[in-house]
Image (spheres, protein in one colour):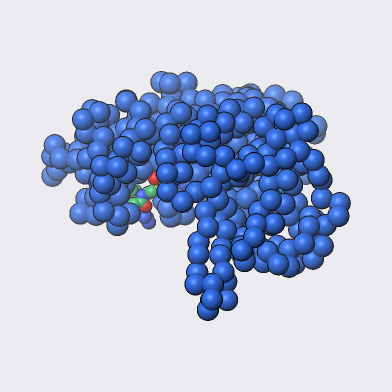
Amino acid sequence: MSDLDVRPVAESEFRDANSLFLRTLHIPPASDDQWERSSARYEPGRVLGAFVDGELAGTAMAQSSSLAVPGGAVLPAGAVTNVGVRADRTRRGALTALKRAQFADARERGEPLTMLHASEAVIYGRFGYGVATRARKVRLDRARAVPHPDVPAGGAVRLVDAATAEKVLPEVYRRIGLTRPGMMSRPDGWWRHRLSALQQNAVVVVHSDDHGVDDGFALYEAKANDYRFDDGMITIQVGDVQAADTTALAGLWRFLLELDMAHRIEAVDRPVNEPLEWWLTDRRQCRVTGVGDDLWLRLVDVPAALGARSFGAADPVVIAVRDPFLPENSGSYRIGPEAVRCADDPQLAVGVDVLASLYLGDVSVSELVAAGRVEVRDPAAVAAADRLFATAEPPWCGTAF
Ligand SMILES: CC(=O)SCCNC(=O)CCNC(=O)[C@H](O)C(C)(C)COP(=O)(O)OP(=O)(O)OC[C@H]1O[C@@H](n2cnc3c(N)ncnc32)[C@H](O)[C@@H]1OP(=O)(O)O
């Protein structure tokens, strides 16, 4: 019988934890240069190790962040990443023990939420995570994607070098603000890691408004084919577009669509309701090549999380929440103008993972009723619950971590 112990790893062990994690993704250990960049995200006390008989067998870490929820509140949230268990130690409870320790740590830190992007969709539901935002991938043929005359116009764009980007991008992101449910703050270490990519092939374009105030940016890389023979000359791969308003967003997209020599533009992690189709004379030139799960959310402290978001106008609904992994969250909640625990008979019942999918407004209650994921005890409650949880626009995270 082997002995499993979970504890925060010392800073001197961060690199071992990183190497172990990379191996679980079948990636070789980082070079000194890669580790130098990657290590910025490692926060003392937030990198956990699972030790089997004293030897590191698994790891999971979190970055201190925060998440915008419906109604405008921004809640402390751990951004969980670099989760992996050595291939010869899997399926013996190491991840389960790491998740228990991470949730306990989140509670101590006063973080009602924890979030992640999942490598596989089957891993995290059992721990109470649900898909809370989705994102789409689009592809545009530059020659045919002609901007519509009604596309908002204004401001200016400029290319900036790596040193300028390091200063300007975090400022612009802060100025834009966490304006939409699902947007998260980007820790300093996240920025250091992300911007270190600029030493390589990434290009940064910044948009400023008519008063010269920077209000958006885009990061992209060019992937060159042999333009003499291949169908495609150059594909522009867009990794991060952030904008304060539609004029800035349209200005950045217009710039990308006017890049000489670019044959194709591909963008990932875009909001499902980004108005690209409406900005083209031929809407079919915006090809959606995929819509996938984006942010997975876990309500670690259900009363605090429900109490922090606003709800739409409708009669209150009593919902029973089942949380086998953190049973202290289980119970009935009256959701109305405010959400509180109660002792009333529930009208609907959900698992805490399903509650996470409803929480930011990505999916409606009735869609999940149709999917069999919401137990209905009072059918009249479904329409009211739809109105309570509905948000003005779909949530979007927009930050890869
Ligand atoms: C946020 C991120 O970093 S995402 C990256 C996640 N990491 C990876 O994908 C790397 C490769 N995979 C791994 O390292 C491991 O398989 C992990 C971390 C996903 C799981 O670690 P394990 O220690 O094996 O998990 P653990 O033993 O606690 O499993 C708990 C339960 O989840 C199930 N489970 C865990 N991982 C998987 C999986 N990938 N597919 C299907 N079921 C899984 C187990 O079967 C077990 O089920 P049970 O309770 O019914 O017996």
